[in-house]
Length: 243
Image (tube, rainbow, N blue to C red):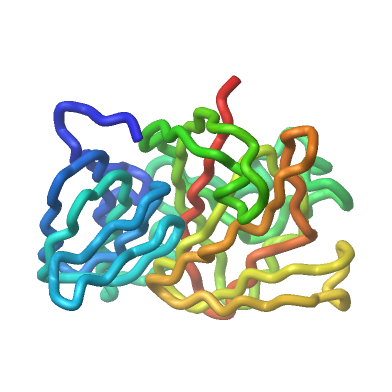
C-alpha cells in the first residue's frame, strides 16, 4: 500500500454519522473506542495481545482497547448506535442510485429499476496496492499489478432487494456496518434461482470476493445482489486495476 507522511487519515464517506478513517503503513496503531476494523490490504494484521490473533486480508472484526501490529491498509469505522440508520442519506454526497445511473442496463441484464430505494454515499480513494489478482481470488498466479482501492457506504431500508446484477470491472467485497443484511448469489437474474445466501451482521466482511479472473485477465461475477432484512448500512471496498 502506498503511504503518506501521516498514516492515519479521516474519511468523509459517512459525514458526521460514522467516524471513518484509513490507516496505511503504520507500524502500530491503537484502537481505543469500539470500531469495525477492516483489513483492506493483502497481508494479515495482528492484534497485539496473547494469544496473537490475525485479521486476514479482506476480512474484519470489531475491536476496542487494543494495538494493531503492522497496519498496512485498514479502514476503521466507529458507529453510534443511537441515531436512526436511515438519517445517513441526508449527509453530503448521498444520492439515490437510480438518479446516478445514466444507463440502466449497466448491470448486465434487465434494467435497474430507478425507484429502488438504494442509496450510495460519496466514494473515496484510500490508497494503491500491488497485488496478484489470481492469488487474491484463490486461482493461479497471474502476475502482480497495481490497483487503486476505493470505499463508499450504501443504505437500503428493510425489505429491499438491491437488484440482481453481474457486471463489475473491479474486485469488490462488502462490510456490514449497521443492521442485518444478506449477500446472495443466483444462477439467473431471477430470485427463484437463489443458490447461496450469506448472512451479514455488523462487523462482518465477505472474505471471498464473488468474482473470478478470466484467462484474458478480466473479471466474471455470478448473478448477485444485496438484500436488506432491516434498515442497513454497509461498506463496499473496490479494487480497480490501473493500466
